[in-house]
Image 1 (spheres, each protein chain N blue to C red):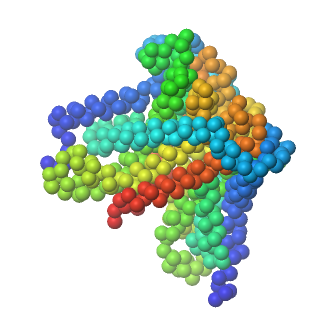
Image 2: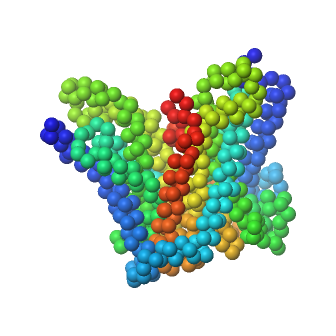
Length: 294
Length: 275
């Protein structure tokens, strides 16, 4: 029996070796090392470090910069995720009919999935830029006033508009797939029971696609918390830190962390814990309420 | 009357809503296209309908942004990562499903746990590793840290699990070894999932932004994403040029996604729909 257990040991080592090497060298080791650097102060490239104390994590967490960017990130997620989901569901429901020409509409609604963060952000940068952007013109901007992207109180909304648009294709595709997996006879029987359109939607569609919605919202929340490219290209964290998200705080330019690899490690480890807690909350809390069907 | 049959006023209403939604969603892309084909550089677009159409701006963007080089870099980096991730994931998934060895559950748990570690938590140290290896500004820095991913292992493992164990036993009796079974049975049976994962992997590396920003400083190693950033910073006063650049960068992916629609949907919805 013991021999059987070890039968494939060599082959397993061979097959798992490449993945194990990459994952340990570039995921596990860097995480452990980042936790270590997190209690040090260093130069920008981490070549000279001196130990301060583990208290650095608590200090960093309590710092205004971290607290502010945590709030910015939460706001950003609270704006982009619900609006993105509602728009994605609406488009998917609207396009979930076999009528003539629906393929063209589906292609258009899916199209933004092909834009990378950089492409979408550069596009929206110019759309919203007061001296050149047509949207900015319509919204009453001019070359002399700062654009939406640099206006206090509005910048985060402007970034959100760009990211909601960029993520719409993803949400649309995922929700459409979810809608197509709902058995048609459920609608038939709801119809026979006299349920109108809206009540069919809330009593049949929504519960049946709730796993899909959970998945989409987890992805969207994660994207919001990991947002970097759109901030880097649209606002560089401004005005006055109003769009400095957690990831931008860790890796952006010209911030407290930019010249200190140790502090950057501290912030990125804290970001890791924030994301971990978020993931646990989302899966534990929501999974119970999700209807998985049979 | 079937319930999804749409008639009369309702049909017109639905088409109207669809049209309005389509116009809004497509508007930014439309503006980008008009801007890219418009001569002159001062304003993105002066009116909604294009008047003079020219390829000059696109040519200029291609040249000034060194976009040919950036596209080549992105293709090389994304293809290397995709091929390697598919290979390492298939092998590891196979070991987890069809091989017997002690400690399998623990090793699998550790692999799975790496899914919880976001890229952002490890980049500082990874950049330092690249610097110590003297790999900054190289293809190695852009590819090596991403040659394997627990996501692929997990996704392919899930589909390998659906292959009946009896098939392996029968193949074994016919004298088919593990690699033979992998190549002739397991991979062909799992082709749709592997294809979806490959597309997902390609798109993820193609779209990657933060890592290339951190490990490349020379424009020779710009990917399309960092190349776009460079073009934007260099030509803030020439919006058309930059917009033409985004069109060039976005086009290959649009074409590719239309060609691989099915894999895309499967890849994006992996885990979303129970089935």
